[in-house]
Image (cartoon, rainbow, N blue to C red; front, side, top):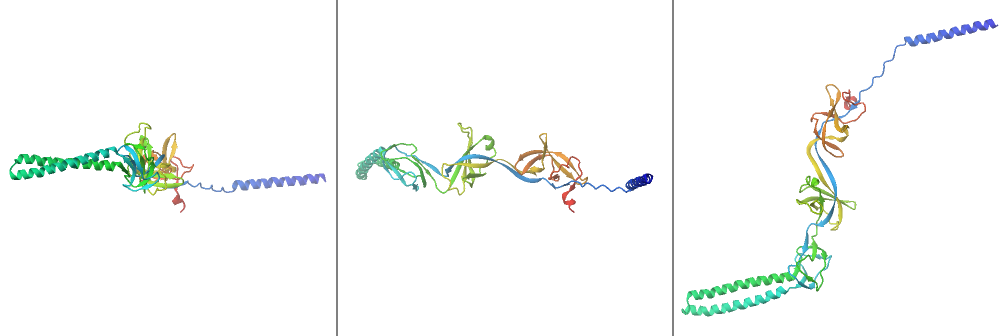
Length: 358
C-alpha cells in the first residue's frame, strides 16, 4: 500500500510540473498588447487685444454745495433789523438784515448840500442870462456861470451815487438763492466787512478732495469720479484741478461736480474713487496667461507649423484684476496660450483644444 501511495504522489507531482510548464510556455509565446497612446495636452490660445487699462484709487472727500457764497457786509455798523434765521431758504436779492450805517447819514447830508448848491447855481445862471442877453456881461463871464452849473450837476450825480451805494450797503441781501447754512447775526450786533453767513445753492452738489502729485498727474478736467455713502453710489465729473500745493498738507485740491446727489448733506465726508493711472489703446493679455519666474514675466506662444509652444519673455505695464498691458515681447499675430497645464513647458508638443474635440 505504501508503495502504491508513493507511485500516486509521483504521478501527481509530474502532472503539476507539466501544467506549470504549459502555462509558462503560453505566456511566453502570447503576443504583447500595444501600449495606450498618451494624448497631447490641449490648449486654448488668444491673440493679444487692444484695450484700455485704468487703475482706481480710493480717497476721502467733503461734500459741498456746487454754489456756495459768503455773506459779507459792505458797510460797518450796528444791526437794527434781522429778517431771516439759519436754515431758511432765501431768494437772490432777499433782505437778510439791516445796518445802522453812519456813512449813509453823511451821504444824505452831502446830497442835500449839493442839491442846494445846484439850485443856487441855476438861479444865478437865470439872472446872468438876462444880463447876457441885454449885453451887460460878456460871453466869457456868462460861460463861467454855465460851467458852474455843469460842475454843480456833476457834484449832485456823484453825491446821489454815493448815497445810493450807502443805502444799498445798509441792507444786506442774499447774493444767490439757496439754503442759509451758516448765519449768526442778531439785533444790536456790530458787524463789519467780515463773513456773516454762508448760502449754499440748491439743485446740485460738489465734492472736494486732495491728492498727491503722483495721482495728480493722472487726472484731467472731465474725468469721472465715483462717490459712495451709506451704500449709495453717485457719479461725478472733475471740474477743477489745483495747481498749487497746500502748504499744510503737501497735497493738491481737486473739485468735482456730482449728479443727482441732493440727498448728500453739505459738509459730510464720503469715500470716492478716481482713475489714478490710465493706459489707452495698448496691447493687452488676460492676467491668467502670464507667468513669472524670478520676478520676470513670460507667456507661452503656440506655433502652428510645429505644433509646439515656446516660452517668450514679456515686459508688462499697467495691470488690473483682469488684464495686463504688454509693453514688449509679443506681436499682434501671436497665438498666446491662455490655459494652464503642468504638461506645458518650453518646446512641448500640444494640440489646440478646438482641434482635439473634432
